[in-house]
Image (cartoon, rainbow, N blue to C red; front, side, top):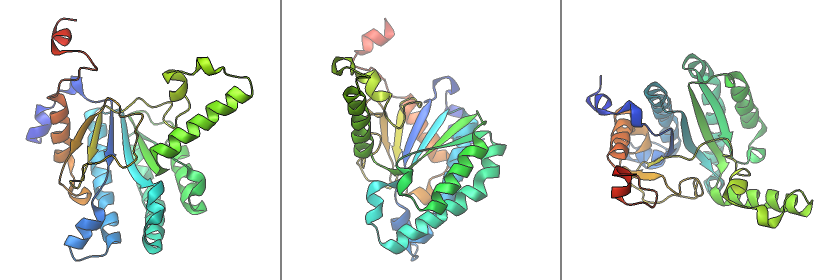
Length: 249
């Protein structure tokens, strides 16, 4: 057993961990390989981290797989990513089922190639009854898209007389987000040393603990996840209160 794993308090696990999987291209460049090689190698990290999170008892794991801004990358890389998505989902269905992991997505899937969208829908259907952990893939996703979409949905209800403006509060807004049925993440991890959020779950991470590591995603392994969780468990989550209130509620 990993020394770090043994130190984790299973009673204080984050229910939901979100990860920005960054550094595939730079990792590949450091190996003298094309960027696509980094994306393909990163799939190994996805598999290991997903299984490690499920084994720990994490209930939700959300991975930033493809942002709305990623369409601006070279066409050949975008095509390779979409192909890799299809291949990976088809290959990993049995692994997800054997680990009792449910697949879910957030994002505007209507813009994905038909083959990619169908592979996702097939994976979601084949894992829908699994209950150990939910793996959420953020695909063609951005927080600004999500917030604008939620605003439009609410506006349409107001126009139709289904909702009054003074009834709109945080709960109503949250109910119209793509993550309406997912708890907010308590821990956000970003790999590769970049110190920004990149338009990811901006509403949902209002009170998340942020953890940044210099490790590139293809090198990120279970022990790196355990280290992030231990760091999370050593922090004091006050939610606007002071330390004394947490000790003496």
